[in-house]
Length: 264
Image (tube, rainbow, N blue to C red):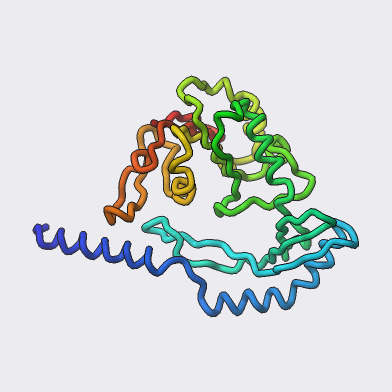
């Protein structure tokens, strides 16, 4: 291949990347209409179920159709949004307000009312000093906020009930000192899963200076292979760069059903 052809391919590829990034992640008019129709047909069922689960004073506001983000198969970045068939809304019970999702499949509401309790229980479950933890996020298989049955209110409860999980724990703790035996309690429960169902990643940072940007890009970063970090897009250089270098990640621990990997 000639230098001219290679240059042409690079320019073309760069143009495609810039185009995808600048056009963003939108929703088609067809999907928007599906969402409007869904809200119109299901919102009363949502309200009735809220009363059934939380009592007569439960109220549902800001109802909308839930969406899933579809990621571009080549670039791994958000490309479009699709209606899931479920509704979400703000549920108020007395002085408490939380987000709930009404499942059209089960007719039940799953909520994030216990999310903060579960996050706090993640910290204690893994015995990581709170002073060294910068943040903890818990998402589902589509990298969205996790909505769970109300009876699940701890991380251990998630494991015992074999819920899928994507957990990211951002910490200043030196991860090199840990061995698989330090996580025996986790593996005792996770080994009972019928199949592989997510992972837990500890990400070691010096501080939280780049935390927000890192979290926005976290789904593009590779942790499950030793010394292979993957690439993330960098707006300043208009190209892909090493993820660990860009966000100054000092190390990472990746845990799933079969792997225990320290990556640096």
